[in-house]
Structure formats: structure tokens, C-alpha cells
Amino acid sequence: MSLTAISPLDGRYLGKVKELLPIFSEKALFQYRLQVEIEYLIALTQEKKIKEIRILEDKEIKKLRLLYESFSEADAAKIKKIEKITNHDVKAVEYYIKDKFKGTSLADLTEFIHFALTSEDVNNIAYSLMLIDGLWVYKRNLKKLLSELKLFSLKNKNIPLLALTHGQPASPTTIGKELAVFYLRLHSELINLDSIELKGKFSGASGNWNAQRIAYPNIDWLEFSKNYLKALGLEFNSLTTQIEPHDSAANIYHSLIRINSIIKDLDQDIWLYISRGVFKQKQIKGEIGSSTMPHKVNPIDFENSEGNLGLANSILEFLAKKLPISRLQRDLSDSTVLRNQGVAIGYALLAVKSTLKGLAKLEINKKYCSEELDGHWEILAEPVQIILRKVGYEKPYEKLKELTRGENISKADLHKFIRGLDISKSEKDRLLKLTPEKYIGLASKLVDKYIK
Image (cartoon, rainbow, N blue to C red; front, top):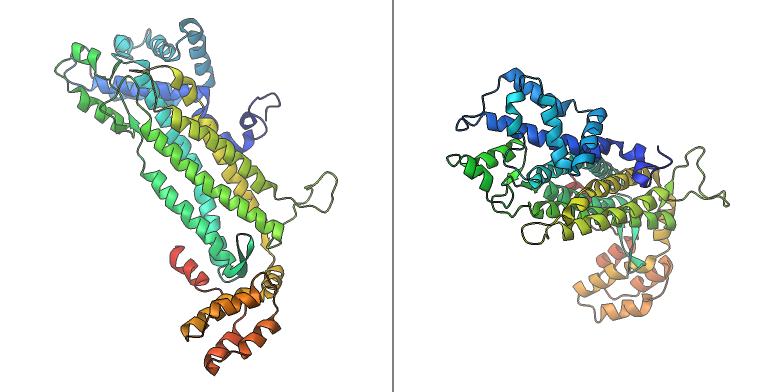
């Protein structure tokens, strides 16, 4: 951990997001750009209509790929040194490759490096590859959260819980079912996120393959570009200006915003359950909850997650709004913005890990849950009035409203009311057997049916 870092992701929280360092760092950006340039050069050598470039041997292709596969921090420093002269990061990568080719068997390929490309051709693909790899790390951790929620739901599907609607006692549910709601929401959004394909453009300075066509008019450059992008795992965007408009990336950002919002909802609900006494938190030896109140075990993991989700969504929302907009054929305002997509993923990843850590500390206070339900017999006004409606009783809702609205009635109060009803013995016995803990509807079965 660096004590001099400006960003908490590079300082306080570095150990928790270090998986992203090989993906979103400056060194990583150079490495992805190298990959784009090298794979393009290889694709050119395999195009038979380009007579001025030879077909490479397998060992030469392997040597070329090693340039980005074995790319080191020292190599990145060399590119930065070149960039100080060029004041252009993509051109610095091109010159770096050319320097590597000097005095080697690859020297004859030098002028086909970055052939007919604009820097945006390289950058849009590099940033998309970064996002794909970063999402893989993020989704791996999100799936861990889903797994924990699933296990928690199934394990606790039968534990009754007093529901609160508008903050007031309402028809009971179960703890497992309430966590299952979040599992299913997140699972659905993950499926949506997985379905989004990032697009790439590879069409030159104004999106028309001008330079490519003037050099080699007989090559089908649209098909060439489509095949090149497909090999890199991207969908071909055929009609663009100089820039890829980032609509598909914005789609991903919005999907992440929704996922983060669901996790925030989960964090806040669990925070409230802890505050209410439904959950207890396991004490970790050596940890301190408050600097002055020794008794406290604070829900800091869920609070940490909530804060980081807010940061992630603020950045993601700006990325989604800004990146699809560019003046005429292009302006440079997207360049500095794109560099921050890793920051957004970093805060989102940190949040997921914090929520996971918090879940691992939870213990259900079954005694409290039972006592809380037993203290609110007024919630059975709903089933009583429903049965009375069923049998044609006069104004059942109004009678129950008079008895229970705003009141905290006891078991004895409710049973006295039920015994005074003019209904069949079977319906009366049925209502007298009902308790708040038993009035959970299909909650347990819903978990079994929908949490697979």
C-alpha cells in the first residue's frame, strides 16, 4: 500500500483491487495498444493481395506476439520516454515497435506498423479489451456474491420475519425469501451484462477507410476489419466517424449502474436489519467498533460498500453520458475520460468485496425474530378480514380496521374478537390456530421454485 497515493484505490484499498492493476494501469494500456498493433500487422501479412509484405513464419509470429505478451514495466518506461518527445502516446507505441524491429529479421515490416490507421483505431480497441478483461475480474467476484446470497436464501427460507412496509409492521415473510429477491435481481442483471457485445471500429481517420482504399483498392477492407475485430472478441461497427461512439460501452456502464444500485439496496436493507436486531454480527478478535464506545460492532462493511457503489455509479453515469458525444468527426474530450473506466470498475469491485465480507459476519437472531413477530398480532388482521370477506361477512375490513389500526393488539385481544364472530366453527378454528410466525404464505416455496 502506498501512503503517498492520491486515489484510495492506489493507496488504502490497493490490496483489495490489485487484480485490476494488470488491466487498467498505464502500463496495461500500452500493452493493449501493442496487442492491437501487432495483431494488425500479423493480419496484414496474411492478406494475399498485399504484395509488398511477406507471409510470416510461425516462429516470427510467435516472436511478434511476445512483444505484448512479455511486456514489462521497463518496456512501458521506454514508451513513456519516447512519448516525452512525441507528445503522442499511440505514436510512441509505434516508434517503440519500430525500434524493436531494428537489426532483426522483422526490419522489412517496419513501415507496415500502424499502416493507414488513426490513433483512435488503436485506442478504441485497446480500451474495449481492457473493459472486457476488467469485467471478467468484476463478474468473477459478483458471482461469489450471488453464490453466497443463494446459499443464505436456501438455508434460511423457513425463518419467519416481520415485514415492514412504509416502516410499519406488515404481513410476515422469511429471511431467506427476502435475500432471494436480491439474488434473482442480480442474477437477471448479470445475464443482461453478459449479453452485451462491445463494438470496435477500424476504419481510419474519418471512418471511411480512405488511406487503406487508396493504397489497396482491391482489398475488401470492411471484411478485413470485421474479421480482425472478431478475432479480438469485438463486434464490428461498420459506420462511424473517426471514433467508435461508445454506445455499446455505455450499455455496459448502465448495466453496471443497475447492478450497483441493487447491491446498494441490499446493503441498506441488511444495515436496517442489523440496526433492528434481526442480524447479529460476528465479532472479529482485535477489531474495534467505536473509539469511545467499547460495546459497538458497527456494520462498516455494508457502509463501505454503499459509499463505494456511489462513487462507482457517479463515474459510470458520467462515462455513459459523455462518451457517446463527440463534436463532428471527433474531439479529444473522450481521451482523458476513458482512462477512468478502470476507476469505476475498481470502486464497484471494492464494493462487492465489502458486501461479501459483511455477509460472512452475519448471524440470524432467531430469538429476536420470534419475539418481534409475537409482539405484533395485529398483522393477522389481514387474514382474518380476508376469511370474513370469503364467507360474506358484513364490512369485515372496517371491523378489523376499528380493532387494529394504529394499535398493538395481543393474541388474547385477537382471539377474543375471533371467538365473537358469527362464522362456521371450521373457519373460526382455522383462524384461532394461525400465528404471526405461521402466516408466511408461499415465502419458503418461492425460494425453492426460483432460486436454482
